[in-house]
Structures are given as C-alpha cells and as structure tokens.
Amino acid sequence: MNTEIKPDCKMCRSHLPDILLDRDYAAKQPGLASHFETCADCRAELNELLSTFALLDEYAAPEPSLYFDSKLHARLREAEAAGPEGLWERMRSYLTFSTGRSFQPAIACALALLLVIGGGGTFFQMHDFHQIPESPAISATVNDLRVLDNNIQAEQQMNQLLDTSGSEDEDTPPTT
Image (spheres, rainbow, N blue to C red):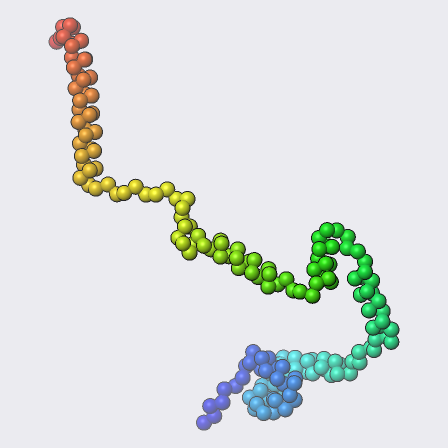
C-alpha cells in the first residue's frame, strides 16, 4: 500500500526556488518530479524560470569607465564645498559633514524623556484629574425623607390656595 501524498501545484510552486538553485532537487523528491511530468502549468512555469536564469547567467555587466572614480570624487568634493541654500540645509550639512558624532543617542534620550514626562501622569494615576468628582451615593432613607418633605410643602401650598379661594366663595350664594 502506497501512502505517499501526491503534491499539488501550490506545494510545487513553493519548491521552485529550491529547484532553481539545485538542479537535482526535483530528482531527490519523487513526488515533485512526477507532478512536473503530469502538470503542464507547473512545467511551463519551471521552464520559463529556467530560461530566465539562463539569460541572467549570460548577461555581462558593462565595465565602468576608467575615470569613473575620479569623476565621482570630484562631484562629492563639489557638493561638500557648495554652500547650502537655507538655514535648515546649513544646519543639516553642518551636522552631516562637520561633526564626527552621531546625534541618534541624544535624540533617543530626548524621546525617552518625553515619554517619561508624558507617561508620568498615567503612572501616578493622574490621568483623570479633569473629571468632576462623583457625589457620594444617597441612602434610601435620606431619599424618602426628601420626598416626604416635598410632599408636605406641596400640601401646605395647596391648603393656602384653598383657604384663599374658600373665603371668596362665601360671599357668593350657592347655585342650585
């Protein structure tokens, strides 16, 4: 019984770089070799990549001219000698060309200090100082007493209204 899993196109394409760098890689993997024999798409892609690699092997880069280095150094000297255009350019060129120091540690320290100062409020739990403090919770008894007081005041006001309106009604005879 053969328990070998037949590789699919996705797995074969993931092995293409290995096959391109080691021509015997596909022979070492019998599943890959059989898939490239049966699958026309994978075989075509492998052949295209092999032909591209063959063209790259044939390519010869042109040699630079004999005066390339001297021209490059002359242009670099001119760029260093030319005055920068503005204040920021002068400052950048001063920091780039004049000093041998790197300002990255100083910038890192400044940013760390900024984080410490900005994060200090969170560390000391000062992040909610803009919120209004909550009033203490009112107990049910105090709330009931306030309601009773409001009811007594409302009853007194109603009695005053009835007393003033009752005295005017005594002068007029009742209608039947």
